[in-house]
Length: 293
Image (cartoon, rainbow, N blue to C red; front, side):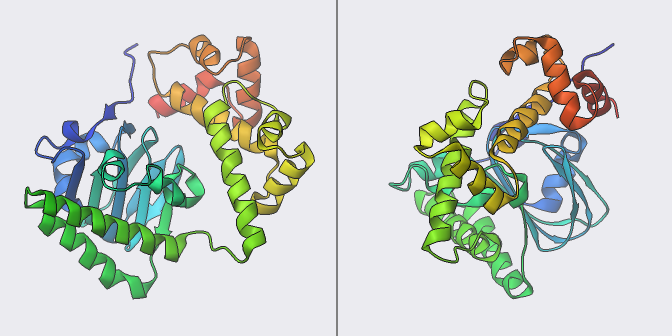
């Protein structure tokens, strides 16, 4: 049987005419050139942002499928698996950029991390813009298209400024609002927990291990997660492990045993039980259903 591998695209492999770490295009022309490849599951090595202004379809991000609607924005971070399926007359804008576009421009190297939609979470990957924002958002994207036709550093700086304006406005429309300092403290602590999970999910599996790193009690950590997310602290760790397992399973060149070892499961049968308990099927069955739907 021929092995199917999920491709990983960088900006230059999608558009050879792209300027370094940035690409700005109208979505219909972008789709016309790349739909044959991009409607199949793939990954990016860059940040990805899309605004739809017309048309319908579906967009699947990390195994979650959304119905595409006009004036809906999508945000993705490097490494996420996604695919498109569109009806006719899809229109909008697409922007690809690498993190270096801003780290070389701003004194805050982690600036993008302040925006929830650039943290890789499914719950914040989509923003439905209110009607009052439609015209202003179109003007910002049109301005970026005009600036992308130039090749000076001033053109690039103007695109950076327009992107920052888009990010801040989207955060106002769809970001998590901070009701009071108490809620803000809880949110900051939760973000710190999520950051630690992202760094250590392969090695640290127990909430008490993360609670120690945060200098709080396991009960405090669990109450925090249930209060803000309606989930236990352990749920967040398991969800991150399962997401990585699904991503790795899209790589047909890795065996199930290799994936189990990569995720620090010393016993392959334990990995199978862990996966099946939450997903309902075995890792091998998931791989076959995804690569050969």
